[in-house]
Length: 80
Image (cartoon, rainbow, N blue to C red):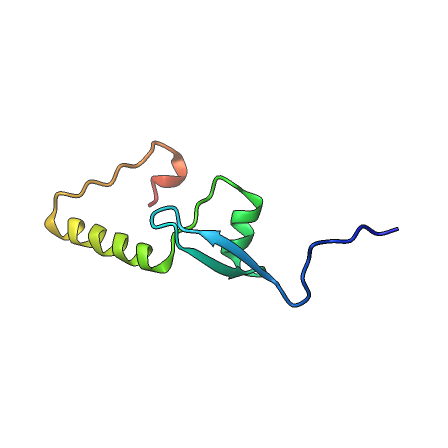
C-alpha cells in the first residue's frame, strides 16, 4: 500500500535559512525561488533584510566610481 508521508495538510511552505544572518523564513512551494533552492542545492537564500543591506552598500560603492565589474569572457556576457 501507500507509505504514510510526513506531509501536513495545508502546510505548503518551505523553510529556508538566510546564509548571512541565519534567520529562518518560509517560502511558498510554488514560489520560483523555492523551486530553485529545491532543484539546485548550490543556490543560497538571503532574507529581504540582508538583500536590501547588501544592495544599498553595493549601490553606494558604485556611486563612488571605485567599483569595478568583473565579467567573464563568455560570448553571452559580451552583450551585458
